[in-house]
Length: 156
Image (tube, rainbow, N blue to C red):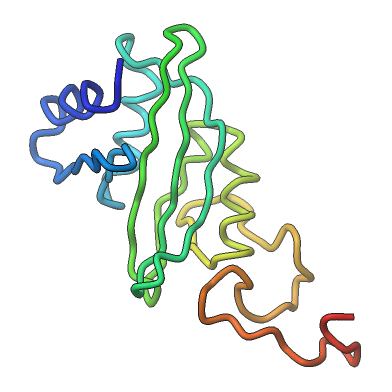
């Protein structure tokens, strides 16, 4: 299945959810409040069977938005799709999908650490690459590297 076919299929199943198709990228944009329900459908539906979350990335949209981007693959059906959830940077909450795809545990921690997306319901959301007491999210466009960290010059 191609992204447009998957979008049309999901739209028929979730007719009360404001799914959007971005044909330029291509990807399907899912409202954050529906990501868990849509993720379960993507994983469990026999026509979709997206059993592999290949990557989950956080992106600064540079317009006051943050994006959680999910790259999915169905090993059995050999198709792929990209899903996006867009939130405001001042309200960066997205429900976790770590119980849908177990590997999301690590990907969500990285997106939290570097971009600051807060995955609500994650069982252990904490920094994974930076020190626990690091302030800010270095992949945000407005991030300013601190001059010092614990008395050490940054960058060292």
